[in-house]
Amino acid sequence: MILYNSNNRNDRVTLKEAVLQGSSNDGGLYLPTKIERFSKEEIENFRTLSFTEIATEVALKMLDGAIEPARVEEMVNESLPFSPTIVELQDGLSILELFNGPTLAFKDYGANFMASLLSHFSKEEERKITVLVATSGDTGSAVAHALHLKEGIRVIVLYPSGRVSTIQEQQLTTLGGNITAVEVSGSFDHCQALVKEAFRDQELRKRVDITSANSINIARLLPQSFYYFYGYSRLNNRERGTIFSVPSGNLGNLTAGVVAMKMGLPIERFIAANNINNTFSHYIRSGRFTPKEAQQTISNAMDVGDPNNFPRLKLLFNESYSSIVSKIWSGSYSDTQVKAAMRELLAKEGYLLDPHGAVGYLAIEEYKKRVGYDNNHNYILLESAHPAKFADIVEEATGVKVDIPQRLQREMERKRDSVKIEGRYSELVEIIEG
Ligand SMILES: *Cc1c(COP(=O)(O)O)cnc(C)c1O
Image 1 (cartoon, rainbow, N blue to C red):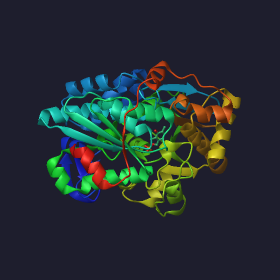
Image 2 (cartoon, rainbow, N blue to C red):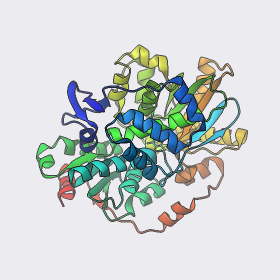
Image 3 (tube, rainbow, N blue to C red):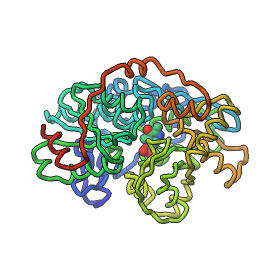
């Protein structure tokens, strides 16, 4: 598998280099030079396979010999012991629940598989790696859980003070061991800017081997294609057109869906659902990409003003705006609408969404109204987090008290430990070198 740099097509690296570096020195993102395709028959055959089996097939095709097949199979088995579930509701709507991993959000898929790839490659190289990750809530906990106590790996997670939910903060700050949680007085964008500065700091990089675990690392992105194949394989009417609704922030999940489509999965359209942080939705509607300061919402994992996978997404469509809008529709929704949507689906179907999934649901509803609903499509909504992760908001919106899963309850009892910083770069360097 050979990858190229989004800033310079002639800059090529192996999978190992891409995973260990995170992004290129000039800030470019890595993309596969070639995307292998499945035949229609191969995809039809996924119907009878388990999630792990499908994930293995997709990984083998994707990695294209970069790691020996027996090892790839082992890595899928060890890193993804959980599976998505699909819940079929009425009017062609299915919910693909992606919250069955350890931190109850879809990011467990990317984080766990990346952890396997990282430890595989760092062992091969006998290198000690420091993983830097900025989080608006879910990424940090998924990455920290995935890499907790992994040999040769240290994790530094930066999160915005006061802007993550209680459960998220608990998940970030109670692991200890090789995990350091850094509480930054500032926004998520500020945390991300600090991490980017560290990657540009060539002096620092000479002294410490750092890599990124944000979705700029290709290892996070690739495994997110697995569940698109799985969701499709579980549909009863596969001859209908299939539309995926993706609650979107940094666009990692959406980009992974586009990769699945390029691998041959028959996806008719994507609906990219934004909260009021609608940089992408604005782009789809106007053709102009104008990053903005992120605003706080109740779907906080999507509070991103400058989505970092945008260059990748464009390149997957050969930078053609018309190709992009022929495949991707987008809408954006306020917190008030999100709460109403949670109540609506609960009343209509008895299904309880989390705030992120609710943004995706609103987008499907608007798409049907605007583009026309012909009763002849499959709509798959990616439910990106368990409602228990946002229990307070869910209860306030719907009156339903969410049962907290046991593993979360145990986590709620552990003691927090974090390092507080004002947000200066020098403070971060001190932690990295400490
Ligand atoms: C991260 C996250 C998103 C947004 O996904 P992107 O890949 O950043 O677009 C949506 N929902 C939840 C629950 C998340 O944690």
